[in-house]
Image 1 (spheres, rainbow, N blue to C red):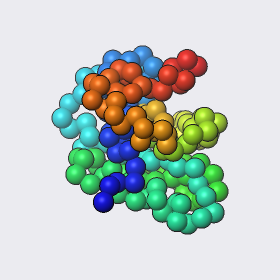
Image 2: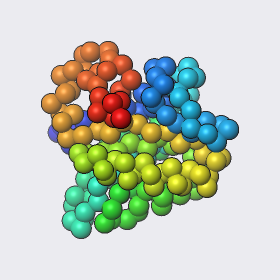
Image 3: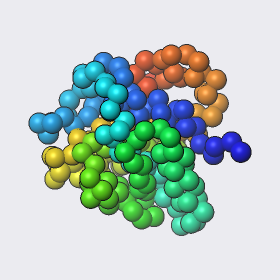
Length: 179
């Protein structure tokens, strides 16, 4: 059975957020508590020390919400991450701050937030604003943001042979880079 989600696209976004590239547009929260570009080289333990918060749209349909949980489990399996949690931008619980609280309570010191299937840029921005507000109150947690993974990723999987991926060397969507 094929995975229901573009897992390789998720992995590329996570790696980019962890600093696989030296991109000035891959913002994250550094140890001093300020947002800074990803400049540190990656170590083999980066994934083991990282919890991913996969953020979906949220729906009144429990089956739609369960699909995000299924993708989270598939992402966690065998990829060396400390954990993968889920949250929703609207309608469904947990919301982004509650998802980040759960990551923190589980011991996360570094969290990568990945907007998943949020084709609407306003929803991705809302998730980021919610997370930035939470991060201000939790300077002990390093929060990084990955570029959104959208429904078009299935079509872009053929571009996975390109070492830079479908969105360029930084893993950022070109629309996000233009802002």
